[in-house]
Length: 311
Image 1: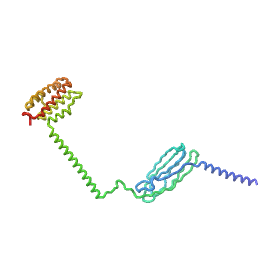
Image 2: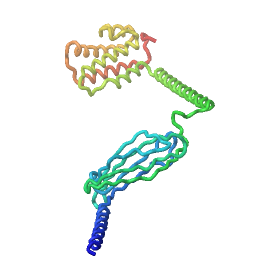
Image 3: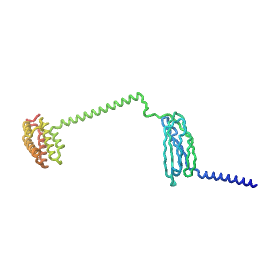
Image 4: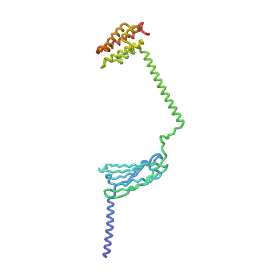
C-alpha cells in the first residue's frame, strides 16, 4: 500500500515538473521575426533577381546573436554576390526596433520558373541564453524574355541611309547659312568702310580712344600725337611717325595743307615736344586745347581738297 502511494506521488511530481518546464519554455518565447522577399516576381533574363532575408525584433542589435545567413539553395539561378546591413528604428512605444538584412543577387540561367528554397536561421537570445531557429518559405520567380540592351539596338540599312542623308543635309545647310552670314557681314563692313572717309575714321578714333578723364595726361597726349601722325600717313601716304615735326610740316606744305591748318599743327608740335623732350608739365586746360587743335585740323580736312592734295 505504501509502495503504491509513493509511486503515485512520484508520477504526479514528475508530470508537474514537466509541465512547469514547458511553462518556462513558453514564457521565454522569442519575439524575433524572419521575413524573406524578392524585389520583382518577374525578372528579364538579362537582369538580376534580388532576394532579401530580413530579421526584425524589438530591442537593441545585441539582443540576439545570429550565427549566419546561409546561402539559399536555388534552381535556374546562379549567385553573383551578396551584402548585409544593420538598421535600428524607433518604435511607436518609444523603444527600438532592430533589423538585420542580407541581400543576395542571382543571375537567371534560362527563361522559365526559378526557385529560391527556404533558408534556416539559427539565433541565440543573449539575455536568456536560449537558442532557436526560423525557417522561411520557398520563393518562386518567373524569368521572362531579356530586355533590349542599349548597345545591341539594330538599325535597318534603309533607316541608316535616311539618318546619314539628314545629317549631310543638316551640315550642308549649316555651312550655307554661316557662309551667307559671313558674306553679309563682309558686305556691310565694306559698305561702311566705303562710306567712311579718312577724316571721319580719325574723328571717330579721336572720340573713342582719347579720353579727358585720365590719371596720366602725358600718355594721353602721346596717343593724341600718334593719332594725328597716323592720319597724315594714311591721308598723304608718307611715314609721318618716322619724321621730325619740322619735316612733317614741310611735307604737308608741299601736299597743299592750308596755312591755317599748318599754323595749328606747328603750335601742336611745339607744345607736345616741350612735354616730350623738355619734360614740361601739361595741365588739363593744355590737354583740352591740344585735343581741340587736332579735332579742328581733322574737321577742316573734311572740306573739298585743295589743289595740292592727293586725289
